[in-house]
Each structure stands twice: as C-alpha cells, then as structure tokens.
Image (cartoon, rainbow, N blue to C red; front, side, top):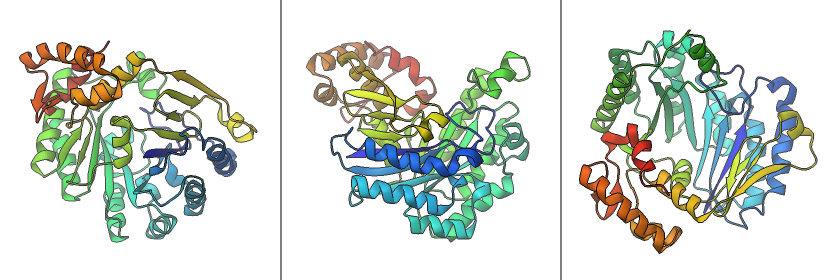
Length: 372
C-alpha cells in the first residue's frame, strides 16, 4: 500500500520559518494549478506500478485557501486514477483562519476525514512574531468548530524553541492543547533555515536561537505533559491518542512507497526517488512534467531505513533490516549498535532496537553512528 501526497504551494503570506516550496501567487495561478496537478497525477500513475493508495494527504502551503469544490476535484481525480476502495485516511492541512462551519461540512462531503490544523501557538505575541494570520482565540475556535462539524480525527501543530517562548508560556500552550483533546499533536522545534525570513534575521543579528539547555527543557516538558495526558510519543515530533497515529506520515517512516504531486513534491518507489523541480509558471503551462531523480544504492536504502525507523518508538529489528537491505547490512547494524546499547543511547524493547524518547531530541547524532 502506498501514499499520495498532493502539494498545494499557495499561502496568503509566508511564515518567517517556512522553507517549503510555497508562494503568495494564488490569485495568479490558483485555478490553473488544479488542472496541472490532475494532469500530473494521470501522467505519474505508473510510477508506483499499480500500487494501491492507502492514504491521501493535502499539504502545503495552505490547502485550505482552496474552496472545497477544488479539493473535491483533486480527490475525485485521485480516486478515479488510483482506486478509492483502499483509501483509509484523507488528510487536509488547514489554517485556523480559514475554518468555518460551512467550509468544514463541504470538506467532509468532498471526502476529507482528517484535519491537521496549523495552530503553532496559543500566544498572540508569538503568533505575531511568526507572521501567522490567526490569533489564539481563532486557533481555539477552529478546533471547536471542527469537532462540532463531526470530525473525529483532528491533529494540531505546535512550535517550540521560539525566541521569547518561556517555559511557563510553553506549559500554558500545551495544557490548552491537551484540554481540547485532539487525536494528534505534532510539535516541532523552530529552525532558522537559510533563505527564510528567520534565517535572514539570524544573519543580521535581529533574532537569536534559544539556548540548547532551554530547548531540552521545553522538549522534556512536551514529552512529560503529553504522555501523562495519555498521548503516545510515537515519533520524534509526533504524539497520538491510541489508534490515532498519522497513517500517511507513518508510511514515510516505515519506508512505504509514495507519490508526490506538485512542484517540489517527492516520490519514492522503493528503488528511485524523483521530484518535480519546475517553477510554478512552468508547472501550470508545461505539456509534460520534468523531473529530477536519483537511484538509491544499497547503502542509501540501509541508511534511510535506519534514519526513519529509529525516529519512531517502534524502532527496528535486524530481521527487518535483512529483509529490506540484506543480511550483511543487518550484521553491520548489530555490530555498530552493540556499543550504543552498552552506553544507553540505544535500548532493546521486545527484540526491537529503539532510541529512548528521552533522547529523541539528539537522535540524529545517535543515528549517524549507525550509518554506512
């Protein structure tokens, strides 16, 4: 089973931290983009060799800029091309300011059964710093409206590590999130990526990253409060009620195949990875989509398997490594893992190698010691 990712690259304005492919040119290209995405879906249908789609995810950008009728066109096209009978989860990323009772009902009719709400914070000053268009009241209202509309699978996104975010403010945000009882909470540490507004502020001395010790305190509080509230910390940045993990995103971490549609969207078929590197004007006007691609070596397959698996609490077994990459790679992993087990950086849980959640924030450094 595979996943389908539909990239919606439009925003009314870019947040200061965003380094995804997105633009504020919705008025210019929004209508023609739907047609272009449908054309690409049809042209790309053979990339996964007929693998049935289990999940569909509309991300961005801001998919909720589109009326539900356009969302329905994309989903109808996906069902027609890839078969809708196997799809078990259809997610739409939405901004709180776009949520209305009517829009929510129209999304349900279109086939959306899971919402991912980009709340980021319940503090108005921090929302203004990040150039978010909503305030804390609107953020809270969006969750309540989604629940009233009958959505039984709601996720919210939060950000920590923000300059000016104190531990008491972070605790208040987390407690408010918990009180709303979403099925899923994603929490990401703010990063100062080059090319973003935040990155330019950093270079100019207009903003500074928080101290590493404070990052750890905020992460530890995040883990403690959410797990105490009954959320499963199942991936570095993701928490879910039992049975409510993001099926689509989980497929990335378990090495499943996926098809990405839109500029900048990546696809993976188990052997190769490809992505559309066209500009938006080229994409909407081109009769044929042009891709860049790479063929994964056996070392690449092993390294990616280790990287994605150990970001999750399910971890990995040597049997899984042998099945995906080969017995020699499983033997290499076991020899590299032994000293990490001895030092406590890795643990064994039911014959699975896992990184303890308390060390998730530094998991990249641990995982790198297992790479080839």
